[in-house]
Every structure is written in C-alpha cells, then in structure tokens.
Amino acid sequence: MDLLKFMKNWTLPLAMLAGVIGYFVFANFTFLEPTKPFMNGLISFLTPSLIFAQLLLTFCKIEPKELVPRVWHGWLLAIQAISCGIIALLLIFCPMDESYKEIFEAAMVCLICPTATAAAVITGKLGGSASSLTTYTLLSNILAAIAVPLVFPLVEPHTDVTFGIAFLKILSKVFPLLLAPFFIALLFRYYIPRFHKFLLEYHTSAFYLWAIALTIVMGQTTRSLVNSTADVTVEMLIAFAGLVTCCLQFYFGKRIGSAYNDRISAGQALGQKNTVLAIWMAVTYLNPLSSVGPGSYVVWQNIINSYQLWKKRKNEMKN
Image: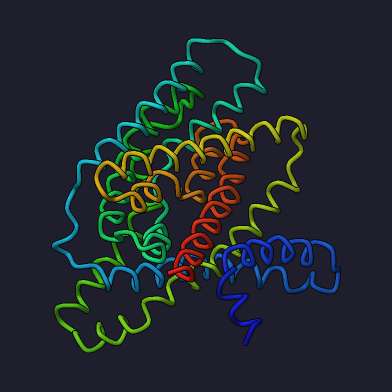
C-alpha cells in the first residue's frame, strides 16, 4: 500500500525516470533488437491515442459555457508574440556565430510554441480552471500557426516553404488531436448522457494516461539527445536556454494570472508547452540542433509540474 501511495504521489518523476531507463534498456540489450520495429509502431500509435483519451476525459468535465476568452489570455498571447518577435529581429539583423544562433533559435521556438494539449490535465490536478486553460490552448495554437510561417522563414530561409503550406501543416499537426476529443465530449454530453456520466467517473484517470505518454516522450527525448552529434557544450547551452525560457514563462504566467484570480491556469498556459510540436517546428523550419531546446523543455516543465503537485499535496496534508 505504501508503494502504491508513493507511486501515486510521485507519478511524474517516476514516469520521466522510466522513459530514460526504457530508452537505455532498448538501446543496450541486444536480445530486444527484434522487438524494436514493433515497439516503434506501438509508440507511434500509443502517443496520439493516449493524448486523445486524456483530453476526452478532461473535456467531459468542462462546461461549454465556461469556454470564453479572458483578459489574461490577451496578455499571455502578447508575451508569446512579442518575445518571439524580439529574438527573431535579433537573429535577422545581428550577425552572430552559428552556435549562438542555435541557442537563440531554441529560445525562440520555446517561446512561441503553443500550450500543451495535456496542460488541462495538470491544471485540473493543481486545482486550476481547465476550461480557461482549454480556451487559451486553442488561441495559442492559432497564434503559433500564424506566427511560425511568418517569422521562422525570415530567420532560416526555405524557398520551398510558403506561408499557406506551413500554416496548414501546423494546423494539421495540432487541431485534429485537440478539437476531435472536444467535439466528441460535447456529443456524449448532449446525446449520450449516460456514457458521458460514466466517463466523468473516470476523469481523474486522465492524469495517469498523461504519465504514460510522458514516459514515451522522455524516452524519445533521451534518444534524440544521446544520438546528437553536436558539441556537448553547445547542447548544454541550448538546454540552458530551454530552462531559462521555461522558468520565465511559468513566472510571468503566474504573475499575470494572479492579477485576474487565475494564477494556476495562467501559469500552466504560458509555461507548459507542446514540446512534440516544438521539436517538429525546430527541425522543419530552423537549424535542427535547436530542437535540443524544446527537447530539454520536456524535463524542465515536468520538474516544475512535479514540484507544484508536491507543494499542493503538502498543503492539503497541513490543512
């Protein structure tokens, strides 16, 4: 029972550790070699399926009438757009060594990257408003879909990438996984209420589905970092850029959210990022090495999330 309680209390750190260990086990034990094609196929199926399931459970709890834009949404969108724009101008007009350029590109992609689709799960667990977080997730994805095709090609020119193609590519990566569970949850709410009520009983399971998805993402992140041929010092500086942007975004999100009595939701909205999308954007539109930034961001944001969950649990025990 104590072991079960420990695993429940430290779900995210254990999931991160399991992902790292899992990668090294599959990379170093030769007898597992024949299973790799199957595991790769399973992972490519599991990751979107887990995200879809956890969002469906989370959206079933949300009242549609609560999905309205809030003042802090505008402030956070402005922070994302302006901070990304400043770094882009710096990269365009201030010639610098390629290594430094990769560090700034990593910071830029971490700043403009939209809110993670799973952020609503952690927000609900922390006691924030999943509905206001979901609204911001939609808005931040629209912002990224517009800003990235406009700004990134100016930083790293690609003659074969037009605004329209890039815009549709980003939307196709995000919106099916974000909108489909939302509309299905509405369908269940209004037309199959019994099944909707059944799902509501298990909405807390969304957190543990996210933990399984995190294990997979950590394994993939570890593989990317281990297989990188870049200079270790440059990688460390890029990872540090991910740490700085992560801490700043959680800090400013919480500060702005406090002014509007929505501290937890705003902090998660600005700080918790869709790192899978960020890595794809970095590899597709920037120097691929800059993807180390959002890759490290996976670690930083989940360390912060783990600390927040621990702190909330500690306060509940006091009370």
